Length: 393
Image 1 (spheres, rainbow, N blue to C red):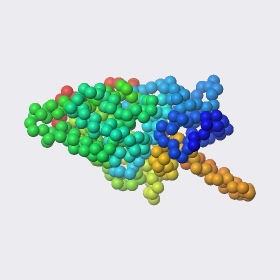
Image 2: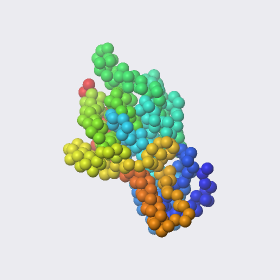
Image 3: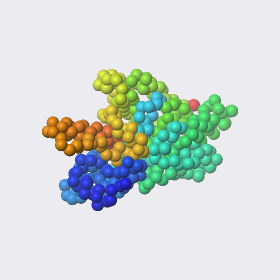
């Protein structure tokens, strides 16, 4: 059971920011709205230092979002998380990045285009409000929605989800019928289909007027649905396991980007960032980082953070709760401890807290990098996306 408000404030004042928001084990995504956050927790999640005149030591979630909204804002971005290899941490990244972004005061929409619908299941079952049905509806009523996120389900204030489901497995083949030249019976039908592609592209771009960040969780494939959203993305985050298989997919990834530009006829500047996921495996992390750092493509675009080995990643997914809403698993203090036992206990507590904080910090770092790109896009507005007059089909 969630602690009463006064009790939680007292706990945070006593801990002075050493822990994170306290919830019951049954906490879900929206429970982060119920948290009370210390001043140091707010500064940690928002990557800022409050003015020394700020006397408050505890903040509600809405108050924390307000602090984030008062910070300098950049251009809205469409961020796609993709690797054609599965099991690299795409859904984990989307889930926790969305939570951090919302805590920072941003208006967030998550779009789940993976047919497995894992991201949707972590947040809320959305029924018919999924990507596939939006596309079908757009075909019959193209003006029903000005932006694709208008079709999304509101989860809480400033947070929406356009979910996925079994039907999304059909979305790529459905788009193939309209966006592939081979599917057109004649040139006239082909030209009409290209106009419809631009129309759907614009539905995604219009969503940027109503959101600060749109995060797309893509399945492990190079299907037409992924190709389409790739053409819309301003930022592509590519998680990599420390093995040769996820690394070998990079060449296909770059081919996919070229395909989006050349075949779909869209000139949309996209920043690519690679995120190393140090899963619980035997590969040498330092050796892998050294190897990819020397790669002319990956090296310059490698994020300065990585997903560390952490039990809190699995716990976040299992409990359907952002990591910063969990609590560190601290060792139990037993009676009649010897001085040596107490020393061991304190060291275990230190390591447990470090693992927990490192698990949050990596997503804070990713959010910081996206904010930098957002501000960069503001300064270089001339590089904003545009549709070519001539389509290179």
